[in-house]
Amino acid sequence: MPLVDGSARRRPLAPSVQRVVGRFVAANLVAVLLLLGGGVWAAVEAAENESLADARRTTDLLAAILVEPNLNAPLLAGDPDALADFDARMRDRMARADVIRVKIWNGDGRILYSDEPRLIGQVHTLDEDDRQALRDGVTRAEVSDLSRPENRYERSFGRLLEVYRQINGPDGRPLLLETYSEYQAATSRQFEIWSEFAPISVAVVLTLLAVQLPLAHRMVTQLRAAQRERELLQARALDASTEERRRIAGSLHDGIVQDVSASALLVARAADGLRDDRAREVPHELAEGLGQAAAALRESVGSLRSLLVEIYPPDLDRDDLPLALADLAGRLRPRGVDVRVSVADDLEPSPATAALVLRTVQEALRNVAKHSRARTVSVVVERAGAGLVLQVVDDGVGFDLGPTVGDPTRGHLGLRLLADLAATEGAALAMRSAPGAGTSLRLEVPHR
Image (cartoon, rainbow, N blue to C red; front, side, top):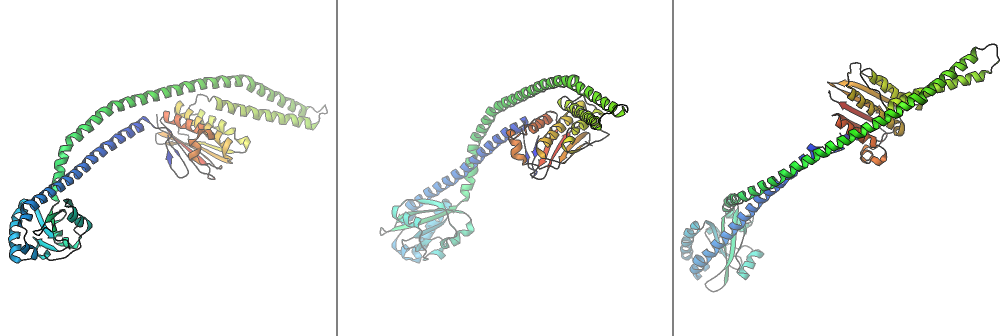
């Protein structure tokens, strides 16, 4: 379960099977989307390239069959009759070839002919590509730049394909032929090309899924097997640890606890006898010293009993949980730490839930004693719906939770083990801390 740092940022302690599978599925979806996106991009590029190639071929045919054979000196000189005759020939062929505009330029940038008569005679600066076409005779095609002034009469047509190539005038001088056609042809071809690519893309996607599904099934099976093995090993480790702690606790209870308890009774009885013996002169300091020794032995017995609870908690029920928590809190009071325990009266935790609460409080108080330098600690167990909530809050120095919990070598391995234990029991464990702000731990246990 997640731990929370001072900025409320949550960090997962261990990835679940669902999370690993979710990442696997997400990665495959991303791969499929990239594949489909690549197919669409390829279709767009192929359609545009094919349209440009068609436009180049159309322009080459117009130049060879219609434009160059009908060029004459009067036309290039601007003779109205020659222009009208040439225009009549061009318009019929332009409609058949899906060409919407034709321009013929000389090398000085003057438009010698256009089917848009307002352009004839205008002079514009030829760009480098135009001048290159005049020099090398290579047919070039591109998406037209309609922002240029010579293209202002084509803007109403929308996006256009522009083709320009060299032609020879009647006197042998190179001229520049430009044709414009609608870009919509490229757009319509995109779907056609995509429909050709689609079966291949779908086949690739289905093949990918067919290959990935057995791998995903195998991965889930292996993850579940590993999780079951981990839980089995954890259960075995807990059983072995419980048995060892039970043995140690039994030895302590039957040995040193009984001996210290008996010694405390003997010393207390001797002190009382010395105080009551009026006939003998006994130094007052001796009687007081024995009394203090008896008190110290009784306190040691209490500490040993708290240690027994910590080493091997008893089988807990509703009435035992507050007593066990009080015993744990008693170990910190000799250190000057005021531990306040509050357990709701209406709780009816199961033995497993009570043991989890006790184990969590035990680890939290151990960290308080080792690290926090706290003066007060609050332990509250209360009902939350059908389950319960445990909160342990101290006023200690706090710490930077992220790197401390992420690095078990810093001495907080117990927190990670607690989080794993809580996850195994279906509970949620969270912690909040920051330097100088104390530490709070929260355990939410659902009803079971």
